[in-house]
Image (cartoon, rainbow, N blue to C red; front, side, top):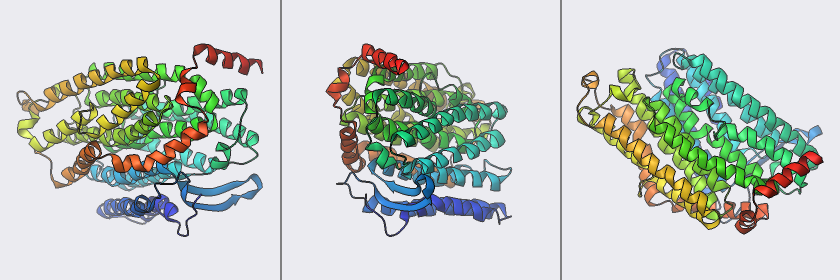
Length: 511
């Protein structure tokens, strides 16, 4: 592991927390907003050297910082990055100033507490992606729960309490299983919580079965994977725009990151044997999420169900055990963060004007708000995977990787792309085109601040869509090493079926 002489990773992680502490001393609302924006911009600028100085030819964790924390139990403060975590760190620092900007006027009560909650969320999310000690990972994982609960429960819609409690209970249940798995790995892995050390340990098939089961339930809730997704539409509908953007753009990536960081390298046999089940659930999520999106009359619910469908592609790519599939899944996590976050921003921009999310209350926005309509069309085309946009690259790689080992699943997943084209284009047609709805005829187009929140995301859509090589270069060596750690090839995994999984289940219960 490449140690860092300057604690650049800690600086990126804790700058938002410092900003949140500064907010406590402020009384002026404008000063609160500018300080929160300054803290997120500072974290973004501090993260840029991670990108420029990252050694793309090494699979080792880089910029590593290690300090003793609780030596009695071999617990350390250890942070560092590989190519997989680097992309998610940059996604988080890139989106955080946008989250602050989109809340600039839409949050009017308890502004200081809201901005502090967003900054705490940023520190916790960044900490999850860089933690190299399991206890530290768990602390950051749990730290996300409270600010997100507050963002939904305090600044959300009419049913915010119900949605916040549902989100809290689902994620808390997953967290408890994660804690159990962590303790089991500590004893089986040589009394260490070091994540790199735990990756190098061999575990018995029965042990892998039980720990994988705990990990699966913890991370599937976060993805969210069918049928553990039911908290997501409620949380999205009731959350303020900033909350929806954080949820869709970063929080859902925690589950995918958990699978790729813990399940595949630490529990390769169990991962391979559970592959048929996960692939079935992934394809069901792709088609079910798209079908449910098609049936929605509420803009936020439509995008929330589209998230279930898109994250199904992520899980499909991760569990086909090919370089193309895993790189596509990682890229799709970044793309989903950009595109779906942008779509929630678009909903928030018109909701601030009309206080309605119903598709039937819109129509003809291309005539009254042409800049807004252009942005909505760009992000909708990206969401359906149009070539030249970011989502096309990720979904193409996932399907390419799936075709190598599971062509039937790849063909079935392709149906989700067709459905995505139907529900997104139908939504755009009803919202942006046709006759102008009198209810929205007098509303102004985007102002400069609003344009500043969506324009960077539009640039990212086309940059990744046309030239994804810089992102894939960062990923490639880390993904290659991940597949080496699993000690399995795609051919090994493709040879396994339901009877092998059933055999493992019987063996685990018999042991």
